[in-house]
Length: 352
Ligand code: PEP
Ligand code: MN
Image (cartoon, rainbow, N blue to C red; front, side, top):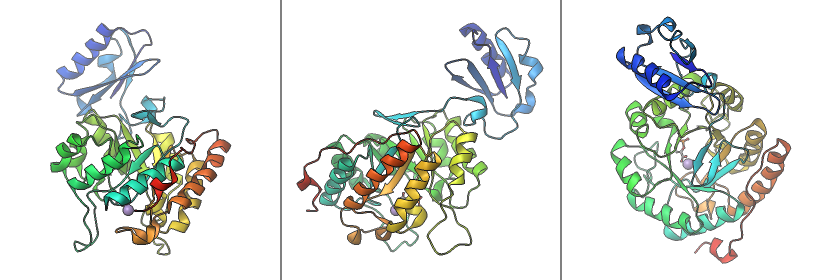
């Protein structure tokens, strides 16, 4: 149930509503918007009725929520949420580009990648240290050492880092390494224990869509994170499984329009895992920005042919830089912007 407070409701009135909800054994989530405060009752709603709240001072109206997701629904939180990652605001007018290799491999590879993506205008850097590979015999990631390599390389250009958490037992290590954004991958979208744990920390989360997840399942997964108290959630569409086999996955651009309507959370697109081929990435990225995506997560490698993971879909630094120029024009056409290219010494981008 959601209790909508009157615009001038005071703290005592909000506290009274909260106490009443708690007295029925439900949890409370308070969302303070610029115009009014919304109070969500979390738990078995059947114990509550609008008549219990409507007469209370400061209450405008209260209602049962028909949709199973509440905290992430735009219905009760009209304003778009902006997730601020050390100054890179995701969900505002600037389309944020997160770029970097699929996996962290070596120090020179990471340094060249950081220099390259920073020079092209990416505001955040990605890199997987723990890799969810289909085969147990392929490279599984550098592990903790990879977190340090990513952090060190990105720090030179002041880029916040995005990296995937697969196992809840690594969460403390991620916090110790100051991971700026925790990525939950497609294979873990419904790992509810993992979602509950990242819901308890104060670190932004990129929640990728499960490869066969419906919009509603995806939103419910986000609700798990929000219900724990972490509202800094960024949703990432990365292609879904269909009957089509001509490309890795089908980029569901429709999901951007639908998600922007259903939820106040930012929505970004990963064109790399959607198409699975580098040559498809520019077209899919342009479509994503045109459709209203708040950001892109793009795989970029200083030497794609040598990549240890997902070599086929990685853009070279030059290709990425060309794409960024194109994307700025698309962003401008839809009333948005993308950070300009930065000045980085050319030698730093060269692969060592
Ligand atoms: C990745 O981003 O490196 C990745 C493994 O993505 P996904 O979970 O979308 O497959
Ligand atoms: Mn990858």
